[in-house]
Image (cartoon, rainbow, N blue to C red):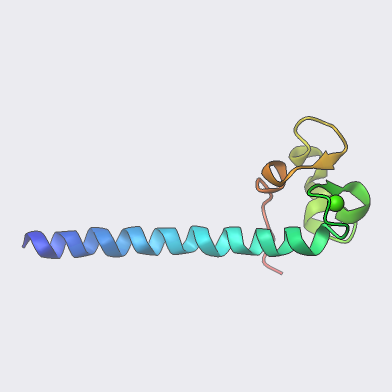
Length: 81
Ligand SMILES: [Ca+2]
């Protein structure tokens, strides 16, 4: 009985973590695609090629410095397309 419960908890944990991995991998692929000059931040020009980033720019640029750090970018909500 105990083992059954443990397996259930494990399965739920693994299931939940794989969703997170998939999400962060999408965002990090987009990050790599957008950071064209590889300077470690996304400028507004670089962001212009992504509808998701452009639409959420004001929400993502927390410190209003005109570029997105990787940490700021990680807050993005990606659309399904
Ligand atoms: Ca850049």
